[in-house]
Length: 441
Ligand code: 5AD
Ligand code: SF4
Image (cartoon, rainbow, N blue to C red; front, side):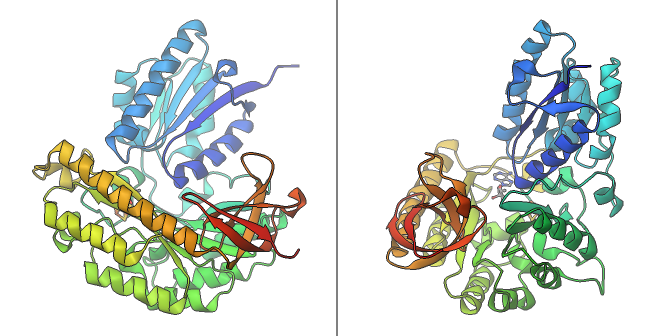
């Protein structure tokens, strides 16, 4: 009998890539590749790449260098690059890295089996055509329903917003929503496999269904998915503030399964910067959405993304970002130095903020947020949270789970509680997690 061929897959970037990687594993199984965590064993190396910032892209080239040397030792090794860098670079990637056998873009997973089989015969191939209709979702299988506690389900892909800094619309293509029936079907299959929590995933998830008048919108979709028996908790990411509708806000008040957390990137606290970014809302409008969400769902936790050093951001603009984080009191904030991406509108803007200044702003922002995060975590002490137990903690001697507000929580208890929602009294609020005791089972 033939020894199983081995796939080593590395995934960079966002949850959409993680989700695509699950599909890649399923597809490669179909042509005889078993996944391995050890690159030395691999017959096939696939990198699923990210190009959101220049640093992410550089990392891909760094890793490719490593596999180039491995291929010298093992000439039969097939190396493939997929995801956003592949989409952006296409043929150019083969010229820069001729030891690569296949380059597959973000809409080309359905071609992957053929491309790898071709590479086994020594053929190089590139596929980066966009496929802009709903068929895109049907051309590759869902991730296998292996169960687990919490799973992501893609409901839409692509983005039409063209924020001035962002490469996503260029590498992920136009917005396309998957039919509500298909989403519910996948969620039901996951529930049947024992999954307790699903996170509905899309680059701009709350503009779900906007392109099809009369079709369910995102609020409708949430209500449909919430009806699936066995699913106890529902989340979604990522939302655009301009598309937070009153109907969506009402969902937080009316759907008990909807977790009290929203990732709502503001990107900046300054109207001038927001305008330059083409975000489609002002600071006041953003804060109004935050207030309305808090009114509908007291205790809702906010997380966000922020960019510092966008072209035109002066000290006063940056101060407004500092004020915004104090006002919103994010549970957690992901913040980045602006990185000019080729082909985006902002890449043509004069970038006059000095690098050292950008770095100093990032550090100030992160230091302020660190205090907010700690204070928020401390504020949970003494209270009771509903925690979904995911499994053993990283140290192995306790359980790990998440509160409705998505705060990482560690507590003692029976590992058989994985997948269950339990009531936990919070005893400690640390910088990155809560500690607590399970009240009853
Ligand atoms: N430079 C820096 N940060 C960026 N992001 C997106 N594009 C850029 C860029 N060009 C950040 C945004 C987004 C998060 C996923 O990455 O904050 O919400
Ligand atoms: Fe990028 Fe803006 Fe689309 Fe988010 S909404 S993916 S930041 S263009």
